Amino acid sequence: MGTFATPSKPKKQRNGSWKATVRFYGVWGTPQITRFGKTSGEASDRLAEAMRDFREVPRNSQITRSTTLTMLAQELLAEMRADTACSAGLVEDYRREIEVSTHRLANPKTIKIDNSIGRLQIWQATAGELDRHIKQLTTLGLRRKAKQHKIILRAMMQIAVRHGALDANPIDGVAAFRRVAKPARGKMADMESLPAFRDQVRAWARGEEVPGTPAYISGPKRDWTMVWVVDVITGTGIRPYEVFALLLDEINLDAPVPYFDVTGTLVEVKGADNGGWVRKPTPKTENGWRRILLPQHTVEAIGEAIIDLEITRCPNPMGLLFPARNGSLRNPNGSRHEVAILRSNHTICDVHHKLPGGREKIERTNCTAPQGTPTSTHPQPTTGLDPGPRHHNPVDPGRSRTHPGPSSRRGQLQRRSSGAFRTRRVQAAP
Image 1: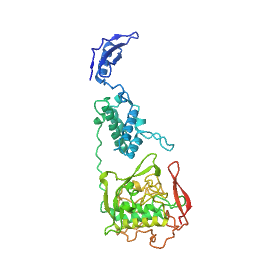
Image 2: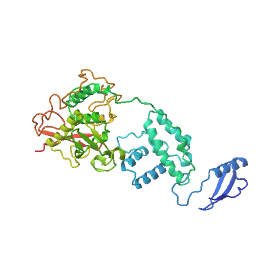
Image 3: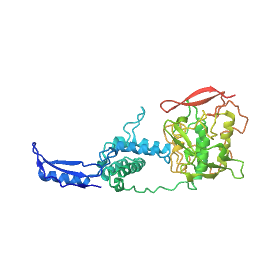
Image 4: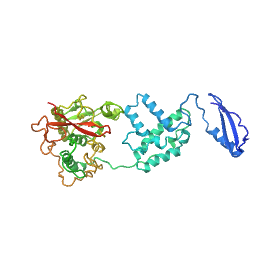
């Protein structure tokens, strides 16, 4: 809405330059556009370009062509927080890719939108400029981050389009990602390496040396819960965040065919209780609710985990299958015990775990067993704590939950301010 008046003839200034002006008559006022040039023709050409790119902006609009992408990103986060359809976890994921972390352990050179293209104004964020940014991330091997930035930038620039600062979304002109064909996982041959892999996880939990990880010497004892977590993941293929959201009420081991229902997952919410983690009452998607039939080794692992909860009397107000020692939700990716298991992609082929306790990768994939590990291709009938099932014999109630050896005290993990964990010894529950 609006029209331009007739441009004035260029006038020579005292400093030798030329000035050309034109007035725009619009709904929100009559602004004047002025351009300068070394010659009369150059001033007229620059004025013509300004008239071509001019967009009238409402008087009280916060988004203009000179708004920086940093300010535009904050406007996006504000809209998402006000939208009830956007979960707190989704807002946090967007914020982490936009803002640079101020934590003392964070790397300030990590590429975020703020410290890479945040200073650009909207009119400078052309398709070519955004395409170069995304391709730079891909060249650095950050393909997943590049996809995330593209999604966030599309939502940001769409706000500029709605406010009239742009005619079209420049992300539409960015090159698409080439599809990378990945080999299929979960082949039948993987089952041949499953017993050897489970043996190796148990050896690690007992404190023994495994390829890439030295034997346990000191520090917090290795958590045997990870043995049960591995058995649940390898037997069902559920997502790691869903493992730590399983509820006891959703497990039925007495049915003719044992099963459990996947009805929730964990999402990280900044400033929330339970270490920043909240149980979402639906899986990754609302249609992700499902009932999974359990194989024998997973049934035995869940049964042992339930018995362990009864013996240790661990506080469990939410009724979780794998609660933290203080009764809250476990941190799926912050603890040294979970970090490798949760990068497994839920299969035992093509993926290299880094089991807790060591920095080297464990040799256990590509359907080959580690050196010195039994290679039987038949499932083992016993999945208890080898050697000898832990709960098949009378158990001392004061036994440590984090180690198969007897103990009169049990360890309780507490988070430091840096995010690491330390062990505080407390008297065992009577």
